Image (cartoon, rainbow, N blue to C red; front, side, top):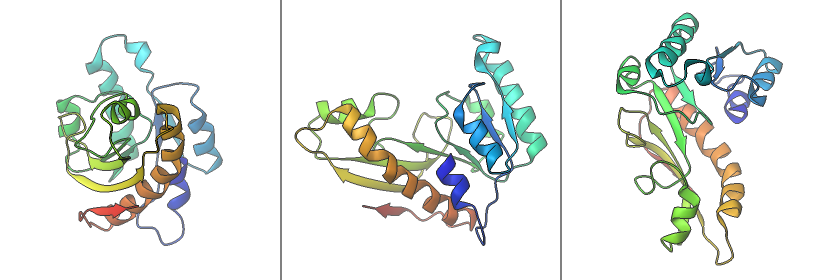
Length: 182
C-alpha cells in the first residue's frame, strides 16, 4: 500500500482518495494519514460470519470516497461475486505467485514443493473467481536451492513494490496490456 501511495505523486494519473483496512490497528492506516490520505476501517471481525454486512460496510465507504480504481494490497479477505460485480474492471490485486500457478494461500511453500525454478508476483483484475482475473503484470525471480518459504517471501516484497505501482500507472491511463518484469 505504501509503495502505491508513494508512486502516486506529481504527474501520476491516479490519486489516492481512501485507504480502508479490515484490521483496525493496521500500521498502514497511520502511514496513509501521514501521506494525507483519508482512512477507513471495516473490521470484518465485527460482522462475524456475515460477509454481506461486512461487504455492505466496505461498499458504503467506497461509494462515499468515489474511487475510479480499487487496489487491494494485503487485503486477505475473499470478496463475493456480488461485491466484485459492483466494481467491474476497477479492482486490482497483487498476488504472490506467477498466476495461474498457486491461487490462494501458501504460494511460496507450494512453489518450493513443486520444485519450481521461478517464482514471482502477479497483478490482476479481480473477478468473482479467486485469483483468476486477467493478468496485467508479472515479475519473476529465481528460486535458489537453499530458499525457504520465508526467504522467498522476503525477496519477493521489493519486486512487488516495483510491479504494482508500474501496473497501476499504466492501468490508470487505460492501458490493459500485460507488463512482464524481471
